[in-house]
Each structure stands twice: as C-alpha cells, then as structure tokens.
Image (cartoon, rainbow, N blue to C red; front, side, top):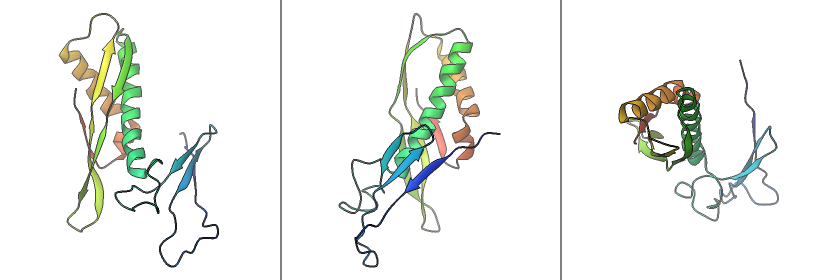
Length: 151
C-alpha cells in the first residue's frame, strides 16, 4: 500500500525554553515541495507564542477531511456522467472535552456547495454520492470524529 510523508520542523533558535515562553510556530513540508507555516491554534496557545496566520493542526485535520470527501465526490459524480463546475466547502470542526477532561474534535460539519453543469442531479442522487464519498474517504475512515455532510 501507499505511504505518506510529512516533515514537521520546529527550531528553538536562541529563545529560552524552560520558561514556557518559546514560540510554537513551525513548518509542515510535503514530498511535492510545498512547505506550509504551522502553529498551534491561537485558541490553545495565545499569540505571540502562536502564529495566527499559520495553519494549526485542528484546521489541517478539518481541511483533510473536507478535501478527501470532495475528491471522492468529484470522482463519483464523473463516473455517474455528471459534470461539476465548482465545489466549495466551508467545513467546521467542533472541539469538545471528553469525560477524562482531554480535548478532541468530536464532530466535523462538511458544508459542500456544488455548482453543476447543466441540470443538477436529484436530491436522492446527490445524497447517494455524498454517502458513497464518505464511505470511501480514507481520512474519514481513519478518524473517530463524527463527520456530518450538510447539503
């Protein structure tokens, strides 16, 4: 089977460490050559110790779920003879606290808005496409979070 590589890099530089006031900004680098600025969420680690402009792991998780669902949906629509002109998803991850007081993303709402070329498929066909995309999505199959597709 396939393997996937992501290199996460953080460097202390000359900043103190033991005082807990070190910056948490780091990078995610991928095998295709893209490097993304990353940081903890400002909701978890306040600026300036985090970088509000960077991607945080929680956002990355939500984006990965959304992207995986979209890619399967597009392929399934194509196989069904449908043509999609655009697909936009404003996905939302919801943080919750477990009984043991640890946090997790317990739910991700996918909110796809699809523009079809020609007539849109029936609501039933659209539902079938989303259900099958969810079933096939590698990331959704790997996550404990509830994933809800709102369309």
